[in-house]
Image (cartoon, rainbow, N blue to C red; front, side, top):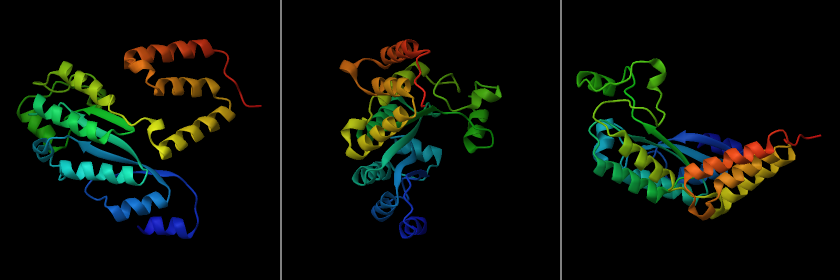
Length: 235
């Protein structure tokens, strides 16, 4: 709150983002950070199952996650959602609960991850004691949503749910504040000479007759090839 007050008093006109927790954001804080230039908050929602959240010792509730998302919508703050799939003991029913939560939130930005037993954490010890760990190389401990991390998880099911969740997104043209930010960014990049990149990003962001993400990726590659060598530079 002190930072927001100082930004307003000094008339500092900047746009900024921050990481937050769903249990610390209330109406007063959301309003203050929005007025001070905050345009995006990153939340670790992690799961839509209260049992799984308790298992993770996250100390939040699903209701707090949904409330934080509502406050962001109210004050025009974009939502960057982190959620974890493939947590030990997680059932498909609980995966569905996470999907339903993401469906309600419809974040502008997604950051799905696969559970990884991070050395030093209590869940690493849990997985080690249960002989669940499948990875050994340092780079495999990255939380990227690919590759098999632990035993007892159906990763094909995780991939299916991940793709479903990634479709639950609030598009830039659906919100005034988001549209303004997207268009300003594209105009700025265009003026700098990045016409090709703007076109690629624009095409990739629109649901052309609900084309699957894999097809949109191919379109993106085609556009890149078409513009290869024709990159417009600012003079």
